Length: 108
Image 1 (cartoon, rainbow, N blue to C red):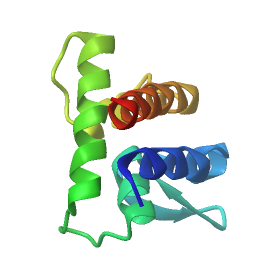
Image 2: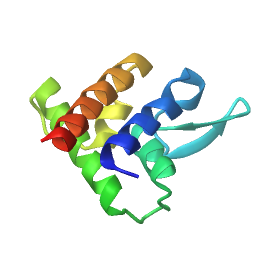
Image 3: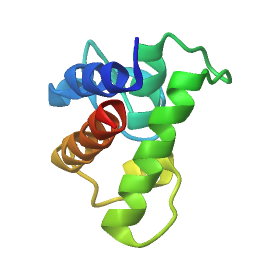
């Protein structure tokens, strides 16, 4: 899997709002497993709690870049995801930016 593929598959996992949440990498809610942005990246990459592989690190880095570009603040992924006003749509838009960055890096 490539960084680009990881970003795309993460967006696919979170596409349904039932699979996105706040405050936990993964938690069961109303019969569905939902993930925060960081948890979704880890799930798709096959990483385990506390372990980060190089693909995850690359996507985390692209997420942080996109967050800084959008907010002007260097927030961690979990801080950004868990903000009170954060919406599912915001997460998908951020993932679109990450996918674009990953694609540009692949094409370069």
